[in-house]
Amino acid sequence: MKLLEKLHLKKPATPPVQSAVPQHEEDETLVARAQRGDAGAYDVLVERYKQRLYATVYHMTSNHEDANDLVQETFIKAYRSLNSFRGNSSFYTWIYRIAVNRTINHLKRRRNRNTYSLDDVDSGIQTDPDFVELMSHVTPRREVGLNELHQRLNEALQKLSENHRAVVVMHDIQGMTHADIAKATNTSEGTVRSRLFYARQQLQGLLSDYV
Image (cartoon, rainbow, N blue to C red; front, side, top):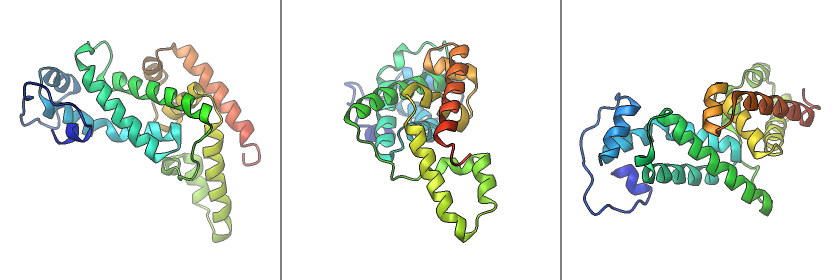
C-alpha cells in the first residue's frame, strides 16, 4: 500500500488484499487483480506508468508542481473508477485519457487566471533530433542562444490551445501513434492529424526567428 498511501486514498472498510505481485505481469492481469482488491497489483501499475504520465503532463503544463499534482490526481481518479474499466482499450490508454482530460481542464482554469510558470527547463526536449543536432555543435558562445531557444520552445508550446498542445506532446514528444492519440482524446484519427498539422504550423510561425 506504500504508493496508495502516498495518494492519500481512504482506507476501505475491509483491508485490501496484499500479495507479492510479479513485476512482469500483463496490465490486464494486474487490473483484474486490483479490481478484486489486490492493492499491490495497482502499485505495480502506478510504478509502470507514473513516469510516462508525468512526462506528458509536464510537457503540457511546463510546471513541475502542477505535473506532480495532476499525475497524483490521475491515479486517484483511476483507482476510484477501476471497477468501471471494461478493457475496451488498454489500461494505459484509459489512464492516459484521464490524465489528458484533467490536464486540459487545469490549463483552461490556469489560462483564465493567466498564471503559469516558464521557469522550468524542459528536459524532454533534449531527446528531440533537431535539438540533439544543435547540441552536437555547441560552443560556449552559442550556449546562451540555445538556452534562449529552449525557453522560446516552451513559450511557443504554451501559446497553443489545450487540445493542440496535447496532440503535439503525445505525438512529437511521447511518440504515440495517431490511433492511440485518438483513443486517448476520444476523437477520430482525422481530427488528430488535423490538430497536429495546425499545431505545427502555429509553432513554426511562433519560432520563425529560429527555424
